[in-house]
Amino acid sequence: MGLLRRAVQRGELILREKPLFLVPNKVHTSPGALLLSKLSTLSPRQRQQYYNLSYVHMPTNLEEGSPEYNEALALAIFQTNSIAADSNSGIFPRTARLNHGCSKAFNTIYTWRENEGALVLHALRQVKKGEELLTVYFDTKKPRDERRHYLKTMYGFECDCSVCSLPDELSRASDDRLVRISQLKSQFGTWANGEITGQTAVSLAREIWRLLDEEGYWSERGQLAADAAWVAASHSDGQATRQWAEVAQEWFGYELGKDSAQTQEMRKIVAQPMSHSVWGTRGGERVGGPGIALY
Image 1 (cartoon, rainbow, N blue to C red):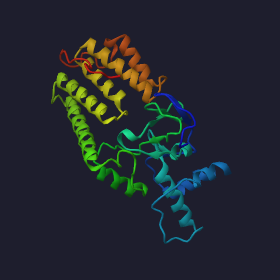
Image 2 (image 1 turned 180 degrees about the horizontal axis):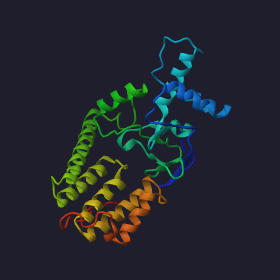
Image 3 (image 1 turned 90 degrees about the horizontal axis):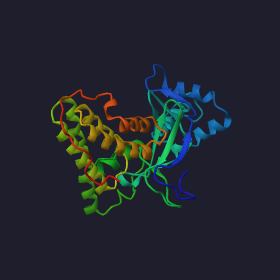
Image 4 (image 1 turned 90 degrees about the vertical axis):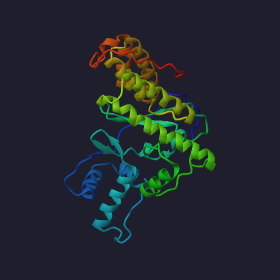
């Protein structure tokens, strides 16, 4: 992984990877001992893949080769490189070697498919030959100082991606957009408790989309459109439900794959808006469709 040998198109599947092993997110035994047990079941080549991964937060007061050292090393590697897989976390050696980029800097997104037992990696946008593949390690819709502090603390490096390297004035403008997106998403979420109308919620979705465009942030759009379709269906706005579902289908196809369950579900909603599981569960309201250039 790293630099591309050829160009890839937005939505293209770059990688499908099975885990070396999975570990439950909640364990009731020594994590280090559990990891050593998992490692003992791997082939020599697979164990080498594991121990070749980078790590941070390794205690310095342990004797190399001691049982305590071996457990601590296994745990440090896992904590640095593990990826969530529903109720588990796993080690995916190729994906783990992808570097991080904030906001518009990252150009790939990975998702776990439980039914396949695999992680899939898709291109969020067109990536040119020779360009580095970057993913995202956490939610980067935060100011630069907060992002850098988190990455330094958790992964041991100071981010110098294209967004974190912006001149101060441009960085502040980017930070303002990212913080505003998070704030608007929180406001959008209050619709679930009946605090805002469906029309207001959809208006917020449009504003979030506009800011995502302005920032060049390509991720999370499928879910945003699907959430807007949910609001529209709840209020029995068939036209808006179909329009938002069309957008969700398109962007889920880029982010998760055209064969993903989410894309297929949106395809059904486009064909029959009234088949949405929440159709008519709120009072009737014309909430409105996307109404902006979404492609």
